[in-house]
Image (cartoon, rainbow, N blue to C red; front, side, top):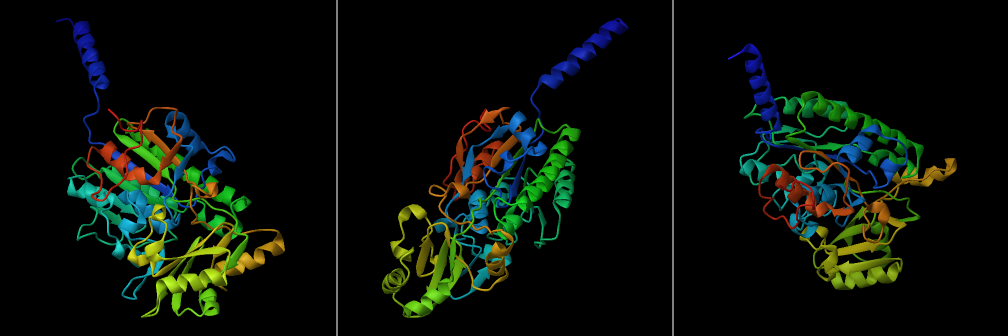
Amino acid sequence: MKRSDIARALTACLLASLALPSLAKPSVILVSMDGVRHDYPDREPLPGFTRMAKDGARAEALMPVFPSITFPAHTTLATGTHPDRHGIVNNQFVTPGGEELRYGTTGSALAAEPLWVAAERQGVRAATFFWPISEARWQGVAPSYARVPFDDEVPESAKVEQILAWLDLPDGQRPGLIVSWWHGADGSGHQYGPDSAEVREELRAQDAELARLIAGIDARGRWSETTLLVVSDHGMLAPGGALDANDLLEAAGVAGRAVNASALALIRLEAGGDAVSAARKLAQAEPRLRAFARAELPPALRIAHENAGDVVLLAEPPLAFLDAWTQFDFWRRASPLWGGEVGVHGYEPEKSPEMRAIFFALGRGVPPGARLGRVRALDVAATVSRLLGISPPAQNEGTPIAGLGAE
């Protein structure tokens, strides 16, 4: 055979191999940017988000479950079920036994299988980097790789470097699932309000790190087997009034303890307290809110778990339940002095568009330029599972988002 014929044959073989689907195992990276409202990316040019929308898919909005609060929302993203099943009803709450769980310990109450456990159970290595509720083992199972404990001072640049380092691991060690929590615009939204310059500044910084992550995947040529999903847990709005539910308990003569959570307050009554009677007294004491014994909560809210307490108070925006004289309350009271405002969240996304979050997707299984309309946070776990080729978490109630990951 002539040398030129050999060269042509080798070239043909190379081109044929490039046309074949990748035999590498799929990877899914799920990044959550805390408190990024659905309309924030439209406020100014953001290269990372622009790239994802252009070459991938963007939803009109991601609809969180109620309450649209960080820990319940992230738990739903990871489990595909509602707070009345997964048990994480707020960032902090009091259990029926009187134990107060908050932030780092909240995950110990998790009652539904999360994505990283579902993946490990099915032979797919998983990695977590500060995802809320991921610090606790679930039924004795932990991800293969985990960055713990949570440290708010760790920058997104370190998260990008670690995600790329995980992708660089050899077959058999590389995680198929990577989930990571990012600061998003939550801090500036709470302190300065959703329409502040500080929100824009924080989002620009987040987008810059997102662009670095995308560039890192570009450089590795990994898009044929990698899907990047960027979501958020909730939006933000400016409150127009505030109540401390503990003050309301005292005024109504109800013996108990309240956990304020902006859109709702969770009340654990003292032993022997009657929830129906307490709810009636509280509603009479403050006509701006709705009060329910836990057993009488509207079923559509899907929050009637024992961790929600005995009585649940619901506020309609812009009214918010806030602890009096905390640091956040100081900012709320002081911000009008310089013409500013603060931000809160937690309300029903169907009623309050400001609670709606973001959803972007790029890479394997994502049609370029796709527009998805509204998608549900409930469906994210099932979508990730389909992209990985595994069954969704055991208690999952969602369905894969149409158009993503389909063969």
